Amino acid sequence: MLVHIKDLVKKTEKGKYALGAFNTFNLEITLGIVKGAMEAQAPIIIQISETTLNYAGVKAITHIVKTIAKNQANNIPIALHLDHGKSFSAVMECVKAGFSSIMIDASNLPFDENITVTQKSVQYAHRHGVWAQGELGKIVKEKKEIEHLVQHPEKFLTDPDQAQEFVKKTKIDALAVSVGNVHGVYKLEHKAPVLDLKRLAEIGKKVDVPLVLHGASKIPADSLKKAIKLGVRIINIDTETRHAFKQSLLQSLKKRGEYDPRKFLSPTIDAVAKVIKEKIIMFGSAGKV
Ligand code: G3H
Ligand code: 13P
Ligand code: ZN
Image 1 (cartoon, rainbow, N blue to C red):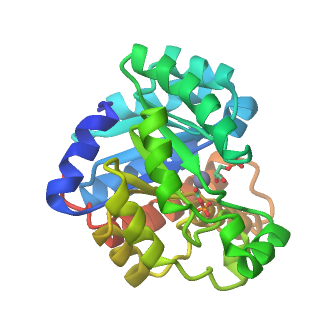
Image 2 (tube, rainbow, N blue to C red; image 1 turned 180 degrees about the vertical axis):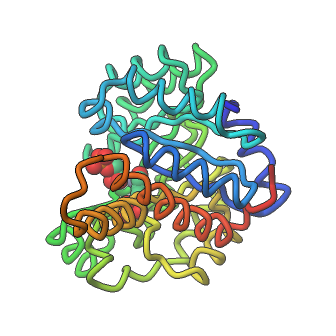
């Protein structure tokens, strides 16, 4: 069933666990996410990035998620969220499409401009009863940027005092932080950069909104558990599910002479479900429906 994100996040504080926020871009990934959540009996966030809106169309991808949430997810509460919204038009589209939460990611802009751009989306979202997430500090993705981050962390990481001001001025409901976490496939080949837990603790003391840890694929379980203790309430996973999907597909396509796409796509659902279930157990949200 589809629920408002605030109802899910509220419960994480008392239970001291984090919700998994999983990216989807098609039917099979969505079915896999929901299957994993049903097996683990966990509340989840399903998120759609602006890149996916452009790929699939807001109506098509939203209807897939909503229909599965309503008809095939049994008792699993699912909140629908826009991930890395870069434009105000994407924010408006998703609010109109019934998302209970949006992210406006203006983290590439200077601090003051990030505040101004974020404020506009927050005000629009709140007028429609929708939650808004902002990003401060930059959570990078490309290899070059990641190497730059390792050399000059202060250029990318969230400053705790700025975080306090950012939350106060923008009125965001959740804050995506940059504390050594990075996006994407770099982590499949290299070690994930180490989380700056001291910084995370400082941020946690200065802001009173739930913290969101992006780029969590391949971050070891013990680091994630420490991050949850310090106030992380939402953890984003995309790369590991994409990887599971791709590996499964490659394996199936080795069978020559198979022309029915359903035959080679259906194992991807189980492959994704396996990752989702493992992550949910790691985040402590298993059994929390
Ligand atoms: O980096 C963030 C998420 O994995 C979304 O990625 O914009 O390629 O859909 P995407
Ligand atoms: P990964 O793809 O690195 O898991 O990050 C996911 C994410 O942060 C989505 O917003
Ligand atoms: Zn992200």
